[in-house]
Every structure is written in C-alpha cells, then in structure tokens.
Length: 313
Image (tube, rainbow, N blue to C red; front, top):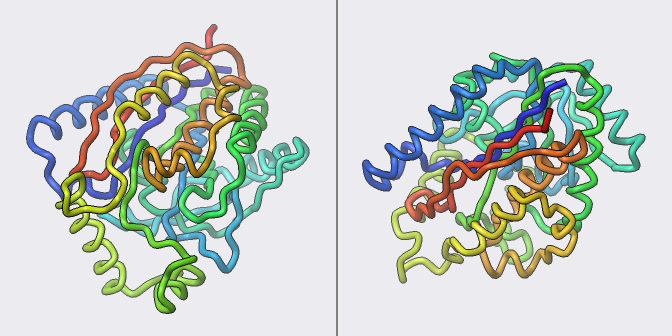
C-alpha cells in the first residue's frame, strides 16, 4: 500500500484570461512537475474529491456528498468531453464502507462532472481515462453547508478504505483557495436564475457560453474597485495551507462557514475537497507534506496553490 496526495486550485479561466507570461510560466512549470511525479508514481487508483458548479448537481436534489460509479464530463471551459474511467465495483465497495462508517453519502450511477473534477485530472494525467478513478463530489457552492467536521469524517472513512487496498492510490483535492466567482445565491435569485439553480441540467450551448462569458468578464475586473466580490486573501490561504502541511487537522472542526465566506469569498468552501483529501491521507497513516506553490491570481479569480504529501513508509 502506497498513498500520495496532490491538492490543487482549479480555475476555469486558465487559458482564457491572461495573467501575464511570467505567471503562466510559473503555473505551467509546477503543473509539469506535478504531472511527472504522478507518472512516476503510476497510481493504480485515483480518488478525486471535487466540487460541482451547478453542472451535475442542482437544488432539486442537493446532497452534501456524492460518490460516482460512472461519470461523464460536461466539457465546460475547454475541458475534455467524455466518460471518466470509474472503477464501478470499487466505488460501490467504497460507498458501502463509508455508509458503514456512519457517514451518509449519495450514490450516482450516471454523474455529470465539470471542470472542478476534470481540469485537475487532465492537468495531472493528460486524460480522463488514463487511470481508474473514483470521483467524490462535495457540495461547496450551494448553501446550506454542513460543518467542516463532517468533511473530515468523510475523508477519514475514505482513507481507512484505501489503506486496506494494497494499491498505489493517488488522492486529489481540487478547488479554492480564496475564491469568489460570480455564482448566484438561490435566496436572492430572480425566477429564471432560481429555476436554473434548481433544475438546470444539460443547458443549451448558447446558455453555457453566456454563463462562461460572465465569469470571464468578472476575471477581467476582479481585484479592482469595479468588482464588488470578495477579494483574494493571501494571508488566509497561506495559513490554511500551513495547517494542512503541519497536520493540524483537528483545528478544522472549529472552522466557521460564514467567517470563511466573509474573509476569503463564498466559493472558498471548495477547500472542503482539500480537507477531505488530507483527512483521508492522515487516516491511512502519518504523512509528510510540502507546499509546492502559491500565488494570488486575480485574472483567474483564485488564490492558486499546490500541496503534495505522502504517507510515511
């Protein structure tokens, strides 16, 4: 049994909104290094904790956690289309283990996943199908949210399961860090937007293009006085990354949802995927971790960070 971890920010605006050649070069370099490390590890299974951005999950039925036995990419923001190579039997076995661990998780036999799941798979493997994968979606943008201790317990259950597999397992967390793109809230949405948030599956290409154009337009002004959204918070991001690297996971139970939203942005709750990933790694044994990269990138509406870790021998 060998377990490694990568936690990465994702951003739909990478390749669409230019933050400058130096920034692109830096990010390309750290992603190339990360991909080489994944290829050298040659995982027999990838478990990816990811958010959804109203592409696969909607308020007609919004579970806090979903595990997929089959998944297809919606191919938003230039990501690849097509199915992921989900290990159906192992996903079902994991689902049963999680449920037996007193964690309620939904099961999908036909899940649609978006860039929150697929971008990182592409960046680290070059494909959606190169390695067997089990996607676990954690609701991170559609309030109300459960407490962070529940995320940690979910991760612990997954970690205990993969620790007994006798496989090389790569655990991914993808999302955040400080982060507030123009995602509407149901409570204050006009009727047409509310209808989309409740049941907006399979939008027309024109609708998807307009939605993506709004995000791109926000990226053009994010971090300026013209933009009213919560700015990136480098101090918050670095403190959170330090907490994970240093293994102070018990402190996460004290995280307050509204405080995080005010300090770093409403979509910062995508860090739930990082919390689950590190909790899974810690449940499998003690670990060593390092911060590989961090930079606040307004053009991508993201505090962009990368952390790597692995269980000790």
